[in-house]
Image 1 (cartoon, helix red, strand yellow):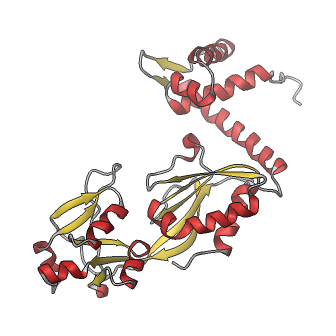
Image 2 (image 1 turned 90 degrees about the vertical axis):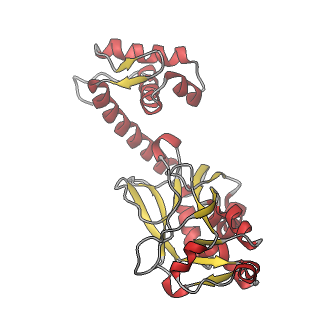
Length: 303
């Protein structure tokens, strides 16, 4: 140890952890809830740090908090140090046996159609030492703030702080029920779709419906007569005779196989989309994450 460096007291390290959680939550109250302490305890921990450092870490208002410039610099350093400690602990404690709680986020339609049976098999193998928390959502995952270990996402991954491993590729299909075609006729060209009842998807995180994308063309200009925020509701509407929709293949292939749906314009399918396994880029990958990734590849469902 450096002769001029004073050892950290356990109280100071606890205060640093509280400070980091407050910085990530932008609220003493939210930080206190996630830590299981009172807002007063969070406030006192910050005050102790500010007194020790002789500087202000947060701008405070009645409704929110915001890091000062010095606070931001201190947070960046503390966050990296805590992550390094956590990585080393995970490596030492979990080097061989998956243990603890594995938190994952999966697209709901992919999970329900393809992945849940495989997850059951994984837990049958490891549930003596491991628990899982599974969140079904297509929303962006903030790994640090939401404490996720791994996510599966469809499409391009642009966050350079994450590892993205290609897992599979999927296609989008325009589908309709035979019942609809008998009642309204079959569109003969893409331009005909403007004169048909089209069902769209609109998720809470975006302000406009998802565009229908096709090979060699711009997004189709459509007038959606019905919008869903969930592909399962949308596909059931179409199966029951209302409208035409574009969905990912794993959502519709079973219905196509049993005759409930038929595909339109297969020649205009886009190139397949990538499915990635995504997790934080760290020097030491916890055993629970490594084991789950290995199991995903060993038992990959037919996509």
